[in-house]
Image (cartoon, rainbow, N blue to C red):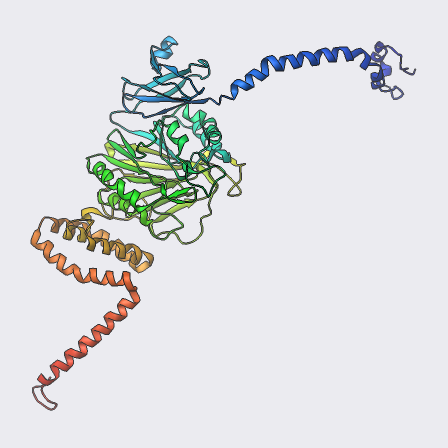
Length: 577
C-alpha cells in the first residue's frame, strides 16, 4: 500500500506508517501553510501585544538600576541601611529583632528616609548589642523591590569574626566567585572589611555590577569600606585628572569633603581605616601614596593608638611592604613607625592583586588583593619579612579574634583559581580551600620576629636599647640605626642573624636602662660610634666605610708606634722585653 499526498492523516496511524515502503509523512507539509497561516498571524499579533504591554514596561522599570540594600556604620546599638533607587526617591525601613520577626512574622519598628535622592541612607538607632535583626528596605517608588535581609549588632565583649576582601574590580567578573562563596559558605561573620578598588572606574555602570555581584554577601553581612586608587579613575580618560570619587562618596554616605579615614571599636578591639591614595600625587588619573598625606594623618593615628585597647587592626589600600619592593614604601613610613611604636595587632592592605603575608618584626602584615582584579605574578626578591604568598587564587581573609585570650587566628581562604592573570572564567574549589593559617597575639608584648610568622611583637617602641637610651623612637639617631637595619642588615643572612639575636637580648636591657638616667647617658655615649658607623654606611656604602675605618685604624696604629718608639729601650738593653 502506498500513501498518496491526499491520504488522510488517520492512514498514518497504522503499521504501514513504519514500513520500509511508506513515504515519510512530512510530504503532507506543503498542504499545511494554508491551514496554519491564519493561526500563526493571530499568534504573532498576540505575542507582539504581550511584549508591548508586559515585557517592555518591565525592562523600562529595570533600567532604574536598583542596588539592593547594604549595611554600614555598624555598632553595638545602631546601623545604617543603604540602597539606590529612583533619582528623587525616598523610603522607609521596617525592622525587628530576628526572634520577634520569627515569632510574629512581622516587623515592629520603622525608620524613614530624611532625604530625597537616588542614594538612600537610613540610620537605625536604639538597637540591642549582639543581636540579630531582620529588616526590609522599601523605596518610595517601588516598596516591594527588595526582600528581607539581616545583620547582627556588635557585642560589647567577647569573640567575633570578620572577613577582609580587597580589589574586587567588579566589572572584570572574577569578583562574583568571591562574593558568591562568602554568601554561600560563611555564617557567624560580624562584618566585612573591604580594602578598596570596588570597580575599575568611578562609573555608575561598573558600581552597579559591584552591588549586583555582592548582593548575596551584603544581604548577610555589614561592610566597612576603604578608599582605593581606582575610586578616582576616569572611565576612558586615563591621562586626565582624577575624579572626585563620587560613587564611593554617594554609596557610603560620605560628604564631598568629608574625611576618608575613620575608626570603630568592637569588643575592645580597635579598627583604624587610613586613606592612602593622594589625588595630588597622581600618575594620570591614578592617585599614589604621598608622604604629606601620610604625615597629615599621623597625629590622628597616634592619638588613637595611645588609647588602651585589647588590640588594634589597621587597614589602608596601599601596602607598606610588598613583594615587588625589597624595602618599605617610604611614603608610608610615618604609619609604619607608629605601628611598631605602639605594637598593633596586624596590618591589612590590598592594591597588589595577590595574597601575601609578612611578619614584620613579629607583627603580621597581610595583602588581601585577590578579590577579583587582574592578578600579578610573584617574581623577584621579596622583602626579608615575607612569609607566604600566592597569585591567581581568588579568595578572602577570615579573622577570628578572642580578646579574653589575647589571640587572633587568620585564615586565607581560596575559593577559585584562574589559569591566566586576566581570565574571567575560574575553576571553583568545592569546598573552598584554607590555604594559610596564622595565630598571633592581639596585644604583642615580646619582641621577636618569627620565621614561622606567628607570635612575637614589634620591633620598635621601648623594646629597643637605642629607643630606651635616646628616649624616643623618633629620635634622629634611632632612625639612622633603624634605616641601617632595614637597608643593610636585613638584606643578608649574617645581618638577619644579628637582628634576630638582638631582638632576643634587647628587651630586658632596654627595660633596665629606661628608668635610670645615668645609665641612659652612658649607653647613649657608647652608641654614638655605632650611629656614626651606620650613618657612613648609609651615605657611602658599607664597603667604603669599612675601607675608611681600616685605613684610619692602620694610620692610628702606625702613629702610635712611631710615638712610642723614642721611649722604647734600645736593642740589646737587658730591660727590653
